[in-house]
Image (spheres, rainbow, N blue to C red):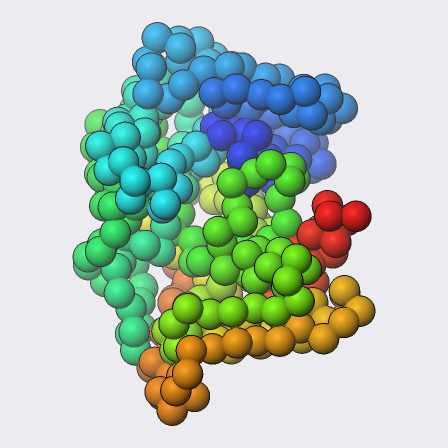
Length: 319
């Protein structure tokens, strides 16, 4: 299989590109820019590199030629969308449309679009499968849902088969330390623990989240690339991907502190605002991924093992 990975030097895209080369697929990455370390890495793996911007259709001409599938991981993240909502829509929605148009014109068979759990909005106490109506409450969630709309538009045209993946809250070590991933809860906790010897929460941390290791998100993408069919009734197929259990933020902080203490060889304190222990935890969230499981997906990364991989990356990075 020949696969184009957008955002191929980014946090998720680089992991996808590396995994696909490991299993023998031909990989081309599209990104807006690259550093020397990116060039060296790509050459070492035999990855083709194309510079282009998904917001500029003229830079995408020919990028999908000879490609069987596209994994669209290029996006503006949550803090960036909050800082500039218009740019967020331009990148995450119109950029997705531009790429779909180019892929359709090139005869690409399958398009896997990375969306997010954030399209659903607040989830306290809910069981959430793909039939639950999206109600985003952040600019990022709004932009991702808009991108999904274009996926349905192009799938309905019949020119390309499209799968939309909605992974839960991600974590895991990046390929490149420069990746924009250190605002993610686990990653932030591990780096802060290394730098300060403690993890401090600014809120009681009672909210529950499903945390999915980056390696399992990559596994979900593989599942969608390899499945016989991913679309449904003239629309894009929509798939949740989660770990199958939820944890409070303060519970996650304690797990991270425990693992980091083992890796860093010193105690890591967890500090909460005064009175936090008197506030009950939110009700659990059941983020269902049965639809993806029916295609063969099963999350494989234990939470503590996933946290350890981040802590070890941080220790090596800071050494």
